[in-house]
Image (tube, rainbow, N blue to C red):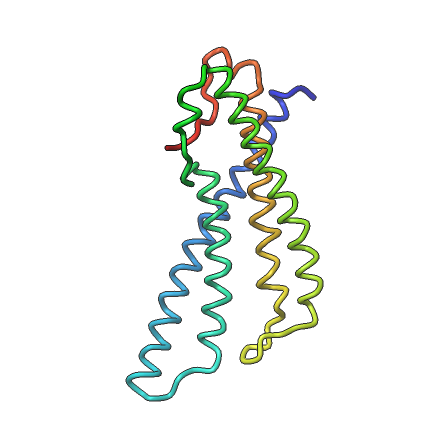
Amino acid sequence: MGASSLLTLLRRAERPISFLLDVTSVGLLAALVVIIFQEVVMRYVFNSPGKWSEELAIAMLIWFGYLGIAVGYRDDRHLSLTFFSDRLPATGQKILLVFSDLTVLAFCLLMAWQGVKVARLDAINTMPATGIAMSWVSIVLTVAGCAMILEGAIRILARLAPQASKGAPAPEASE
């Protein structure tokens, strides 16, 4: 399998995963707003705070944050400093971008792997108010890590593919 066909396959696999990340993030945000609003009303209007809402909101916020990191990486929305790289020739910029992508890929591999280990350890712990296993919270490290691994592989292949140097668009660093 050549690099271009692998790139095509990865991009095809990325579409539904990307859609799922977007839908899940929007759903989490909507649910967070409802749960936090409900908690504020219960606490300040009825003077009867819920036992589960704060715990659930924190777990959902963790998921929302990590999925947001994956979406930001996918959409190239994270902050990057280009002072040095802008002064390099095109080949130097490409090498620096591939090195940066490889570094992020290595971190995401570590994050995904450690996420599995943490989720296994957290399987015996439950949240006190809801009784939900903590592994449901910590597994987001693996979910977000895997989404970013896929995106990182796509970026690297797109930068190194021959058509990327012949005018086809390759991912660029954001400013």
